[in-house]
Length: 95
Length: 490
Image (cartoon, rainbow over all chains, first blue to last red; front, side, top):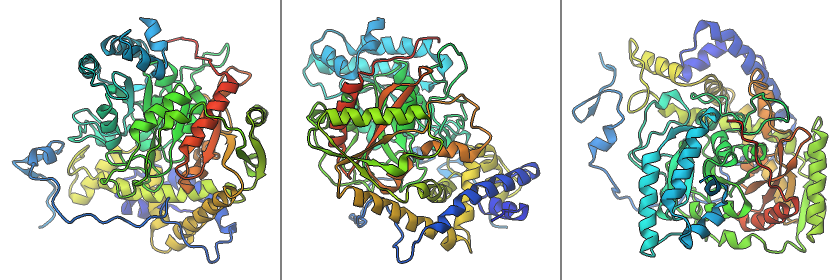
């Protein structure tokens, strides 16, 4: 299936990546090429096949619902691009 | 001093054990080798002071007879493993100068056993690539060259720094990761041994995530025995990774040298792909003959869905990646490019931080997961994945292990496959099936092509059967007598 420029813009928006206008058409061509190659999966008979959602069949283990670590704001904030005291500084989200 | 870096890991452990050499001397020799090899661009961060400090601590432990199984052994660490207090980048600008405040489980086990860290190794950005060319730090240059040709070659990817460093004698072994072939293909390209264990054998905790249902850590080393020693230390159950297997870790090194007589080895006919180099085919025949001579019975098997593995992978892996990489939003760590509002800041940060291949995969993943396409692409790919895994289950009803080539060609030149993403993806044609099925797979160097470049053979085992792979790999290693090293040009 051909991926057009509008679809690239929509997907880039969903992925929160600002693609410059000059990249839109090349990306449309690249993604179309990759998806055309992927289309061959349509040949496989998957009638009645259970989707494989994990590499080994195991049930997710449960752990005790207890606090294991915490109370160390310095470690949590040590890589923050911007901080103020014990808080991350982020762009304003509420007007 | 140069003789020190020629020892294998086993030999170095023996020499350290009998106090013929000290860990400090050994680390010093490797630090000098790394400095001299900067044209290879294998290390993105050298940690010589830390290495010497860890080596001196190891010498003290030896002196007081408290040495661990890897005590004093200098290793390189793929820069996808979080290392406490040491910058970890995943080969991406988006992580910037990210410095973890915690240690990955795999590396913490290596340090627990006494290993010494030389530094962090280059890789494709977020391990997405087969040539190490997508790294924000630029490509690794292979220590190998074609005979009479100075053209720079790829060491393979994504663990290109790990493979190049081991091949060039810059460390005794290295950690690596494999999502679609990223341990085995670089091992094949550089004449080294690489094993991707069973999914869940090594903890993924603290390893930067690419595609969580496929990612596995493993070692790259100079010999099969060295790889077994390293995997022993890296393996084991970890409650911090919910997909970590709670299974006993056998004595892997003890499997090397065991007889392989009477084993049934499958040769999958679908791996004879069109356009495969005749040299690869000849090497495969040679490998079959070696195992037959060692007493194995060779059986042709069929893995009918092999050709659908790569297209299925290029849905499953990007889908998981688009989800995993959503965390890089410039808020809590890493690169932030300020925009007019929150969304603008996200979009600008991610545009500036991710490279082209990573963006391409995030877009594919977002597309196949988006409304209207989920069933047609993602769900179908998961069903095809089941078909591929079932093929292996059926084959393992008849045979104990499989023998295939590792890669469809020898190492190619840097830049050669850069224009066509699909051509690059085809590098993983023989390795990716193993990740989809969650099986252990190992690449063993088996010979050189007409241009003097290494070629590898792949062994694939049943879940948790790494021990058998070490026995078979040891048999191939012995029969091949592979001892070639790249001629030093750097």
